[in-house]
Length: 484
Ligand code: ZN
Ligand code: CU
Image 1 (cartoon, protein in one colour):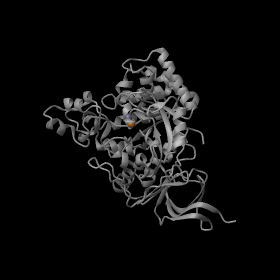
Image 2: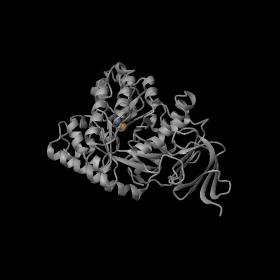
Image 3: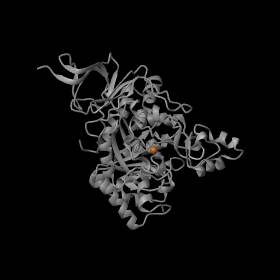
Image 4: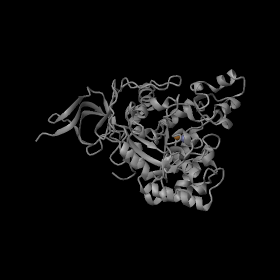
């Protein structure tokens, strides 16, 4: 009997996510799974999409996000991602996760970057997972729980010190319970004041349950500037002592005096990779973004304001221009803008490219979804890698670019049956035009949909169609490490 599918995408250039060369063929989907790949000339389907030689890849995995709350608020928050072809996001990065924590007031920065008052109501990760299931989401969610979040709650805000034994034990139990309830790993943001007083030993103690649960340790390292190599060593030491894989977030060599040092950092990571499992993500821009921190400003590094509670009109303006207008220096101007967010032009494009081209790197946007004037990475990361870095600059092949957004992160994170196009895998798919795909978001005008992404499916359900936007469907699920 002839095969009957729910959906067949015909005559596509299939880029399967493994890094293998693309091939022409058809893809059959039934329910939430890919049921056939190849020549499906004898098969029929309820819906047939003619790709006309355009590319079909596994849906992109955004390996580094702060979408903990965005996944709960519908297309208004998630169009930035689904319009890029994203079907899975990793939340809870940089030590900042929405669960497990309950706060009645606005939490200190950078926790406030994912949610203000009212959003901090998940006493356990299980509560968050339950809410996600109830609300549904446009994308699949893979979650980490964050050290900053747990420190603020467990230490009752008194975080400018090492945690005591009782506090460490409470955080350790929080991690353990979260992993049992569907979280996949633990993250730190040791760079941030809320986290920086935690010693390596505190991190190792809190992260201990990762070994038994097969979880992953993900870190925004203590220092991405002068002491970046020491930070890499600390990260690998934590992974070794805990007995878990490690993931370095948004790898960079920050500040002008460290430009070019990615030669050293990548060699160091390569050396460790001989004996330990390690991965790192990178976003395709030479500027970072986080909350505004006046103490860390420098005169030789440009800063753009992304939001400000007392001065919302300053979003999108350079701090130096604001300071000039106020007749003051950048530090005092920054104090006046708090709480606020910043984009920092602190990287060298050559380092960004070297890190992106490294075979172990994967792509993560690090987009900050609730900023008034966000870094353009929120809307542009994936099409920019495909269109600018693969097609135009030929930094790597299109197949390699796709692998860094799909098969590789799925393998390291342990996302079973995702990130690849093959029979039996989940039907997370993106149809795009490899000749036109490109980002349109810029630093000046950051909330722009990309070009060339034609349709996106998660678990077999269409979530985004070019020209129409979000379909309103919410087929996304919680994805847990190592379990189908
Ligand atoms: Zn970070
Ligand atoms: Cu981040």
